[in-house]
Length: 189
Image (tube, rainbow, N blue to C red):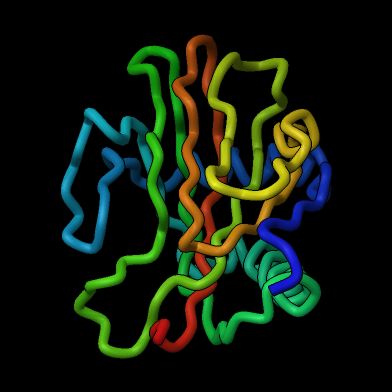
């Protein structure tokens, strides 16, 4: 591993972000859950989520772009053994319920899957930062922080090891939309 994070500022265009959001909002929404058990824990995570499946032809370009970008980021920075990307999660954080996801990490160390762990987490910012307040993405325990303004720009993409603690701070005005992607590979040893 040569870095704790990698990001691509405004990698997706405004038009691509708007299209992803327009089509993604057509998918059924549910309250966000935590852990492999799928528990709703409103004191830690308040958001609505939608699942974008790999088999959905509307999002084929998105899966292709994210996979290629993730493999490049992994080769350049992390060098984890990743082998699959099964779905993408569209998250909504709204001011009406002070949407947030408090400090957490994304590896389900104990899970029902005998083969895979999440290895690399990717967050894609879909909303123009002028449309909401709060909602900052924050990483903990890293030696150097990424530029907060860069990763908040619409279309920006950040990659972090899934075991790093991070959070989405409460949205106090407007709505923030983002995508979360997890690259999986053989279980950590």
